[in-house]
Length: 327
Image 1 (cartoon, rainbow, N blue to C red):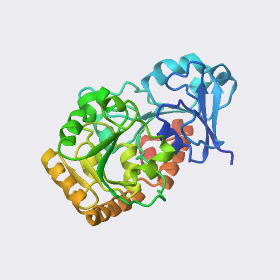
Image 2: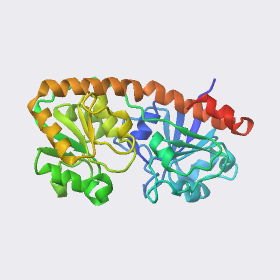
Image 3: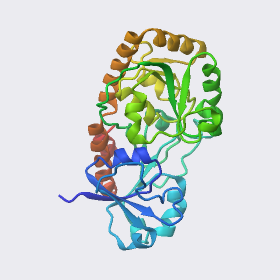
């Protein structure tokens, strides 16, 4: 059977890279301006041959099986600018990466077409969005096994967030600054150097870089489950996190990580990890076991393949049948 041909935009590089591990071909647009979504393959990720960049003026000449939208701009603007009328009638999937920014219980998702399958990356996000699509799914993140051994020799914590200070309280910039006064923390990511961070570490170099830190800290108040947190778990690094959004369901405090909403409690646990390397390794190993089950690449890619197949049969299947395929 021929592999499914999926057209999408390059929105989140790490997510696209992991999605490309699935058994399908992914086409992404490229233009000279290289604005968001139109970067092509770029140079950060070692994409395989199944990720094909297409100049925007050539997109209409190609045949696809399904269109994957990832932003409101993709859905409400981009498709009308670069896709043909025939392509716009193809099966549609919308991947929502974030929880609602406005009221978390009363915000209707702007994409409400019953023919569009809605996919959320966490159950929390699905719960908070007011979805009116006929079929709504959750596909949790998938990250590969990490072969770099965790050493934790650096008696410091690590935070990996792009543009954290520019994005403010939602991503916990104030929490980070408060805790940094009490515990040694390094900050990595784009737009971090001007705030005392270490700048961007390219994704292929991250596993070896983060494995030396004693613990990984997630200060984010309100967003989806970060891929960087999944990667830290898969690397066997103990995670300290705010017990908000989906983090409250993944982490069992004191077993596979430390999770709480009390900042002083988290600071206490960070200091404990800094003084007890054996405890850090024990907690990290339990987190790795959780990640191997909950965020396995095999589960992630097989669920995406099932959703794309479901999209191809969307008009022939009932809502009840669709929800029996994968919950």
